[in-house]
Image (cartoon, rainbow, N blue to C red; front, side):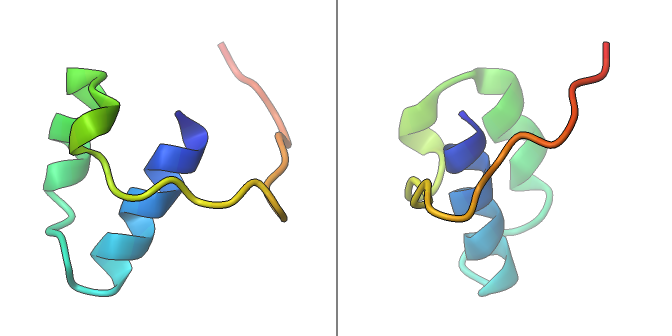
Length: 50
């Protein structure tokens, strides 16, 4: 899911999506409406908070 979020954020940064779409995409839990999956290279888990 993180890679889908990153891919969608890249699309927001490029102006292909509106920032407001992020909430809908995350709440829907539907990867099909998210942006392209970002490559795993360079991504790592830094911290988890509950």
